[in-house]
Length: 306
Image 1 (cartoon, helix red, strand yellow):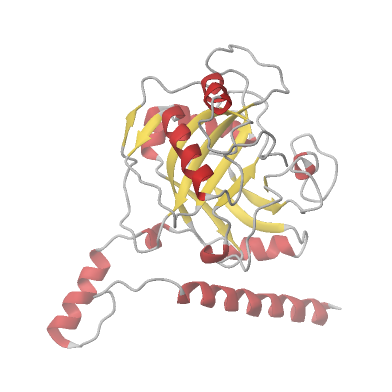
Image 2 (cartoon, rainbow, N blue to C red):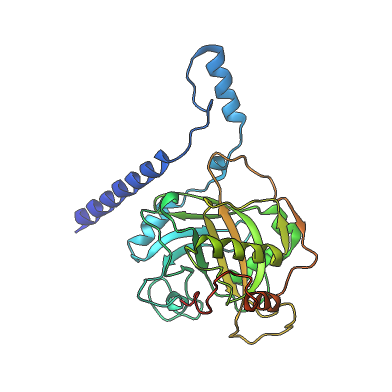
């Protein structure tokens, strides 16, 4: 039996390495980043490459952790890490035949647990796990039992309400079994669940209409433009007070959301986020008013239902 286990693990590692290789083959090579000559020219390029600080240099390696977790739960899809928070945990893929609440009520081992497990939207597509095969928008859900940013689970997302924290933490790290990835935060906002921010692959018109609303609702106006080729990571959790509602019941139709775009390994590192405070972000109720008045073209109520 020990020999069989070693063989299975070896096979999994080989498969993982194949995934990693295929992902890296899609990476754009920056002109001048590879030495093509020895001597002064080659040495100068090598020195320039060392000086050039890119996203690749700050990308954590979580693939071994993910592979180990997959041996215990086949729904393991990735690892989420947010610096200076307690969010450093496995993420599970919600089965398509379950609701998005499935893993929010059980732990990693499948036992009933109020805290649940961080999990992705059941409709999200990952393919092999390489960036090019991900849905346009990957949403991760997690519980938040209060609005205290020092509490556990996704309550810690609310640290992004503090402008200093948001400025000092431009990146979120979410990896799959095939690729370690860095995501740059571009929006922090409160929203009603009627806003389909969690839909994996919205048509183009929905996508940009929703981004316009998110931009108006975000606590910060980031100096980041989202284009049609961008992949987005959405972190969504409960909230208990929003503009116009000082105290909400435990079960309510409002959410606190942090969104980030997938950064290229070749992008230059930002030491801090660049943004201006949005002094008058629109409220979740104002978002509902916009939706009811057709701000999202051809919007159909219930389209976001899990």
